[in-house]
Length: 172
Image (cartoon, rainbow, N blue to C red; front, side, top):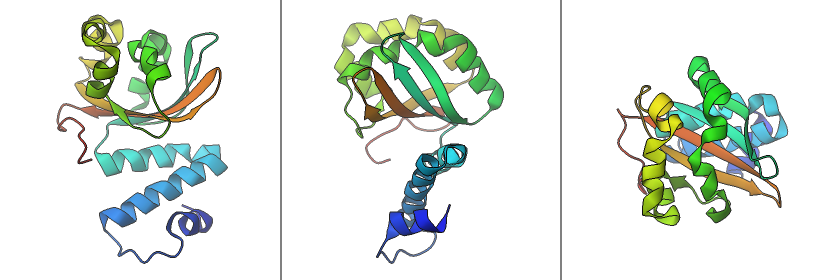
């Protein structure tokens, strides 16, 4: 993380090293670095996974016009990410929830089920993404954080967890 990002993230704060608060400030600084220098997103996404025990993380853009979900940056197993990007990104049923999401409000699988209704869970469970990518790779849950919403494009951070980690909760 650059000195400038550290100063922006923790200006005027005295936070002991090694504390969750310090790790959170470091994560915020890494995100600022990614915004300022896109090549730094890989490190920022890795910091996100480290902090919340994630398996992989993505920075994605959704274009309403072409209904495309494109990957801008990633962290995690390159083969799993390539498989997702090449075979399943365009078949993600959770994209339907984007219009109902608020910027800076993290969503999990359970919270998207709540806003999309009971039929959505069945749609997700029957999807190729779930059946052919999520289940064989032992993934369990995700956090989807909309970071920007435009009139026809949306940007999101996503972090995926595996079955070894408990489901994501408000305590996270």
